[in-house]
Length: 593
Image (cartoon, rainbow, N blue to C red; front, side, top):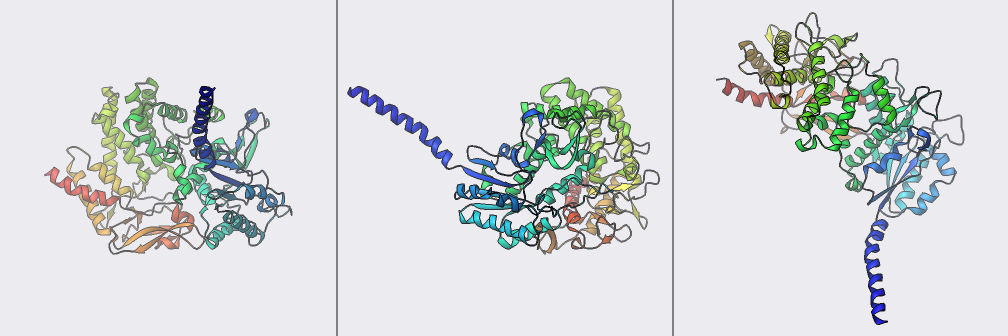
């Protein structure tokens, strides 16, 4: 009897010891409540429904043993109707100290024809948001305001996105400043992303469906507001990045993953042991899908992000596209380096074949004068210019040079005829570089981001990319020239002239700092700092080396503060890359001697 009593006591203690940690862990978990509209809300995933709210996929980014995402967002609700329908009270009742409430309204607040939902952006909209903030704080929890995500509404000019939220976005920013509430500017983040990927690629993020693509929408759909899974995933990633930037305590429980990094970094700079892992192989499958039959790849695509079945079908159907293959913004270069690293680890033949197809694309795209256009096959407009912008030519020529120099990463390119073609193409590229070095009053200086493919003169690209001397792209060109073994005297002189120009135009006594502006948005400005290292402007005037800046209106300005917020923060106007050139040149001179 005593023995049985001890046994039962032992079992009870064992159960308590086993259950208590799990119970305590459950009790101590942080809950993140998300309140908002259909762009956030959970969607029915049955019946191959492709629609998702971005908060629906948010749990994928967190350690769910420490964080619970409780998505209370509801389709069609405004800040007013969400409250009027009694949806806020249960959230307040359940809130505990240390929880979070993510608040994002606006899409339906704008509907002035519907009195049940409409709010005045300068009145009741602010009032409801203020109430949500104050109620959250009263429970010892943390409110976070978010501006509404952008609608996919491009102007006739695809470089311009129409802002459909207007005063509602501004109201959130202003209120966050007044109430001292952390804010994530999803409107700015999503707008910038849409402009980066353009009208066609952005259809894959929103509910644009072909007839028969989804049983839920048999006749197809053209919806510029609601998100497919890919769009929800990308926008959730932006929100998570915002959590990190704000340094919220919640950020401690964000998972570390490749999704936190940009594609070029994943493609080229992962630890060597990663290439060949299951995760890398899954990414490689995406890379192969994105490759066009031209051999090249489109730009601004996070190819390491997950694809669903419909995405894969569309990519297979788009293999014959000929209007988006490019080496701009690291495209084609990044994919080829990635495939070379994958082949080195796995010896999977399809990676080698895709690389060689990409190599043929680079060789075919070269002009007879040695330059490369931005897109190949050629597209009308400034895309035909010889393009140094964003290191397009430098990246392509780097691969050619490394193959010609028999670098180990590309040892599998072993056909002597192909190696010879790479060496010849590189040499012709160098000749083009020498011919396009701009002479200012007869003195060689540096290069423009684009040069006319016929006259070789500096050329205009987008409205804010006027003919100019480039402090950014020119640095990459000179670094490439300094890698040439046994350079010709003309190459040495071109390097010396460029370094002299860099020394002449460097800007001292300033630095570019992030700050929160009057609208409570992260912004950039130039501040005085006598101890700051030198910087260089992106653009210098051709005749007098004066730095300038430009907005989408094409009007030249002479201070960063004089251009609009979107271009001021959406473009790299200053660089320190020439300092690397100057430092390396000192060693280069010694080696040449």
